[in-house]
Amino acid sequence: MLEVSNISTFYGQIQVLWDICFKISDGEILALIGANGAGKTTLLNTISGVLRPNSGTITFLGQRIDGLAPHAIVELGISHIPEGRKLFSDMSVQENLEMGAYIDRAWKHRRETLEKVFEFFPRLKERAGQLARTLSGGEQQMLAMGRGLMSRPKLCIIDEPSNGLAPKLVQEVFQIIKSLREQGITILLIEQNVRQTLEVADRACVLENGRMALEGCCEDLLKSDHVRKAYLGL
Amino acid sequence: MERFLDVAIAGLLLGGLYALIAMGMSLQYGVARVFNIAHGEFIMLGAMTTWTLYTVFNISPLVAVVICGPLAFVLGFIIHRTMFRKLQSLSANQGVFESNSMLASFGLMFVIQNIAFLAWGPEIRTYNYLMETVSIGGALFGARRLVTLGFAIAIGVIFYIFLARTRIGKAIRAAGQDPSTAGLMGVNINWVLALCFGLGAAMAGIAGVLISMSYPDSANMGQEYLTVAIIVVVLGGLGSIPGSFIGGFLLGIIGSIVSFYEPGLNMAAYYAIFVILLLVRPRGIMGR
Image (cartoon, rainbow over all chains, first blue to last red; front, side, top):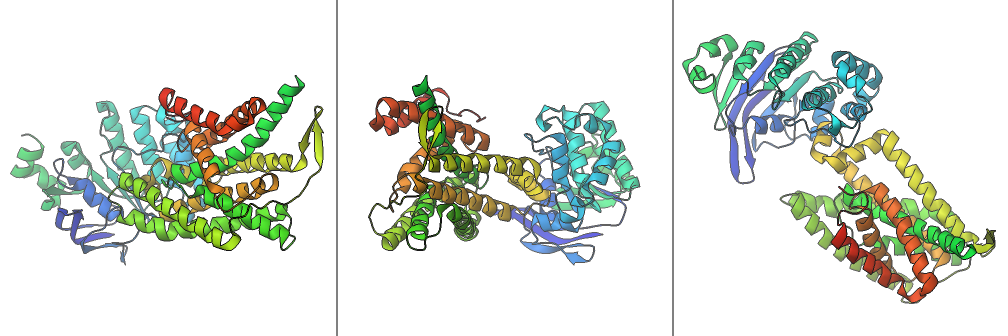
């Protein structure tokens, strides 16, 4: 579905990503793990068009997308749920969701999609008229995810969804990610909770200092000495 | 009591114009992040074009509204797509862009002003239109002033509904809060920024048409209105469109009270309010 080949990205003069290559196939959950500053968010921003790679190619469903603007990439079916939720805090819950359906393809079906999202996140329905900034942290994350689904994506890129949430809510977030996959959405996930992430995901890539250090199916990575030492504290 | 009513209505009439001018500027700064020093020149272009249309082509100023508004929009849209878009891609961050774009708009102000001097010369231009008077509560007001107020309120209300209810209106609000995330939602952000700059210019152009119906016009009239716009925008809260709307009426009423006692002190009173505001409540009425 998505193929990233030899991507290098710079912030100004500083190179952050070096020759990144990976693939995501239809219907899988791919996890991206790595320490803070390893370049995970930069990689996601490069895929969704917020940043442009200096070299390399990104192909989505057979089409080159590197160099396209973010709005064109959403249109093709990639939804990026950014780190830190990034809600429109002075707009209502419902308006935030409607913004998620901004692209033409999704706007036509926004009412049905909204119903589906409300089924998925009943709390959002109760709070539809409230301003986004009045929600609790957990509700804000639900809203961020709901908004990401409103564009009817084929691939969902989710950046640190459990960040800052209580353990019980973290469980809920992982449950939601699993059920998204059951709905046929392919997922690229970044998470700090490495153990839980490796349990949910099919495959994982380990990013270290802007380079791809390891890649494999999660069972193998859970057995790898390097992963156990560096990311699981075992 | 009757005098009180006079002053209050005169204040509303003046305030409607101020609100319109300030809303345009607020939109340009609040979303497109351009503190547009050339805003007064779009007002001047609207006023002088209306004068030409009326005195040369005998086209009514009410028709001029639907000519000058769209023309100013196109001009603003193109200026944003070329100059400000280029500046944005050359600026390292938003802060740098805000100062660069303000300096560039200073230059734009001189360019437009000089072209206007070439086109219309330095003379002060006036024309007579809708000179009938209307009596409200015993006081007489020029019909043209009431038309002006009607337009200002109508544009304010329509624009508010546009922002609150429509898809593009919501995209504008989202882009004002977080342009990068609005882009992730599928909003073509460069297009929306140019749209906002164009809409701001259109409001200035229409304000110019309305101003020319009641006040004398000249190629260097822009500065005075720019000053008023800046004061109202700060009064209302930088970038807040409802704040600018309310602030415009507030300043109009204050202006009307001051001119009732001493007509020459208008601008001095505005500056005094501006300075006091910066000291006491720098974020303005609706600012955060």
